[in-house]
Image: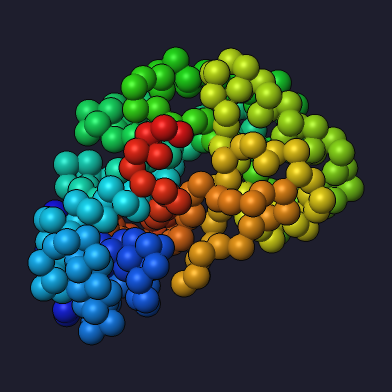
Length: 280
């Protein structure tokens, strides 16, 4: 664990600031520990009955890690030094599958390390709208027997802009959603229901407000599915139509923290305490 104080900088400072801000303390989330962050730490320490020295040490982090648990979502694009990973990462979502056939080649190796570290974890599937729901259910469910365990969070469906081999392909794939909204909505519904039936869990839906409101405006049938939303901003994210709260906020897509360098890591924070996350 890193002790952070005035003058510190980097990804763990960003995590500190994001937790404080989410808990209601005025704090700019910029990765630079200055006087404003010190004041927020002191206010938090006072509120929690800690010594108000403005330094984020063991006791302060223990409170923050419980009250505002944070994690990361990863894929083959990330190289993780699991032995050196920041101790403030408490959960991990790993990409397993995409479309009807793709499987992430790093999943099994990383899953073993995640389990060894005792982290909360789960797997996610990137939805492809031109493959059948059943083929994508089958592709994702190929991993679930290895995922199941005591620390497993719900499965995740990643519903977002489609990605092609070039700009023309990408535009065509996203135009398909516009031109076939009912078909695409049915694929989402069938995947959610199929995976829920086979896992006994209510899947989380990852989607961006701008994407969902553009392509699925007025759809509210997924309100019971926990929402995981990307929004890279200071203030908490606005919600897509159909949800009145979010469970997870992906607040950074370019972080570097101990154990994961390169500036390309997605960081996430849970909208609740650690007990609520475990209950999820």
